[in-house]
Length: 160
Image (cartoon, rainbow, N blue to C red; front, side):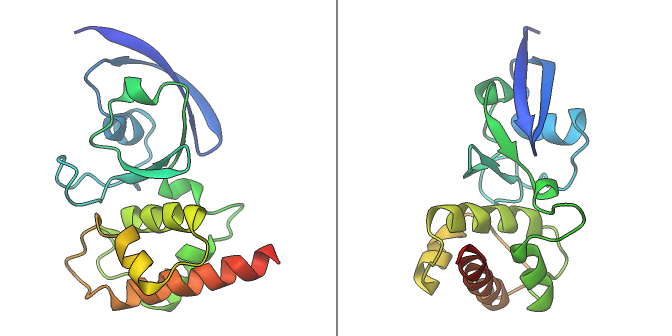
């Protein structure tokens, strides 16, 4: 199997890895870097469990080859908290009961962060659009939407 050397910045840390050219970014994140917060769901880009931020934009890491991420910056759910302090999204997901089994939560958080990076004050319709690729079997999404809206308000206040 042909291999390639790649360099990535993941959650602020730099890595240089030798990987098979057919290895997905999801496999590198989970198996090579040990960051198991990013979940493996369908491996077809349908469920959103593997959502991470690639240069600040949400992507399904199961659909991205690791070699395609060479030279790019990646944020996983492990990169959200800082010095033991939860990101506002994480905190409001807890407060609003937006977490049930937790399997979809990392991907949902990353999709929501990608949305808030692009649109800091989304409407409910924009939130729905922003998380439409992330499936949750446990909730009716109501608490998730409420949590994202609340987080957007907190982030907006912090920027003032």
